[in-house]
Image 1 (cartoon, rainbow, N blue to C red):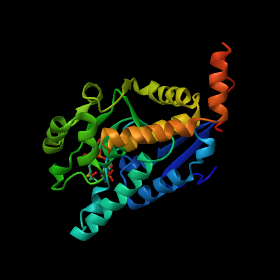
Image 2 (cartoon, helix red, strand yellow; image 1 turned 90 degrees about the horizontal axis):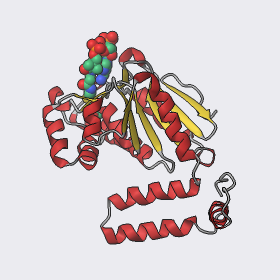
Image 3 (spheres, rainbow, N blue to C red; image 1 turned 90 degrees about the vertical axis):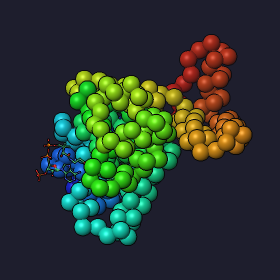
Image 4 (cartoon, protein in one colour; image 1 turned 135 degrees about the vertical axis):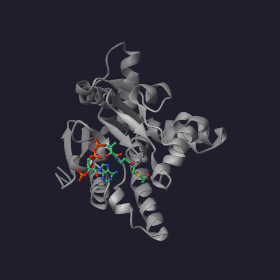
Length: 263
Ligand code: CAA
């Protein structure tokens, strides 16, 4: 498969679903330069025409990602730290704007850059053992991979500032209550539930799912008038496709549609 197994990333394609596993359990999957660059390689290798959903998870039972690598960051100068932040942000933005939906299966600690990685995904499912935090102010720095931007968009400005200012760790149940995650499952059920959700997404018309992601994402950063223009553009692009004709004809003829063909 494209990219194949790397040192710190495992990849698997199961029918239309591409699974990326961050594989540095000895450091709780902390994001080093190598982990980040392999993650980027993995994201770049997703074959959009053959993939309808991506799942990102962490290796082991303890951590999704315990943050950016603190040993690596310790000696950085102001300029190097800015570069590090820009690079991580660039890669996370690639995940956020990947044409197909991305599910984070948060199987343990999601701290700092780990919480930020989960937030760059479209949907977050967590195990009951997951713990979330943006602990950076306790380390003398701020969230640097999008945390100051995405947390407030997801949970509201007040709650985001509370979490960012206090570095408080929250359990999966609280993450669910504030809307940081979509659902929580027993640890042993998480992978299966993430896959089930991915399959549910994959069963729909791929062009329409991709258009939906684009419209929601781009609309979020626009005024309502521009957002509606974006929606209309994406709505139009779904028409005259085989999948649109197939599904609408099936409805009109009171039968099930043929499987979608991504065309
Ligand atoms: N960076 C580097 N190494 C890390 C790490 C990180 N973020 N998190 C864990 N590790 C390493 C530990 O150093 C340790 O390595 P050794 O065995 O070689 O000593 C190994 O992973 C296991 O960790 P612990 O022994 O600490 O495990 P624990 O069960 O006692 O504690 C933990 C688990 C609470 C997650 C703890 O490891 C911890 O607090 N980690 C740091 C979490 C953190 O602050 N993350 C934010 C980083 S800042 C950031 O991400 C900035 C940004 O926005 C870009």
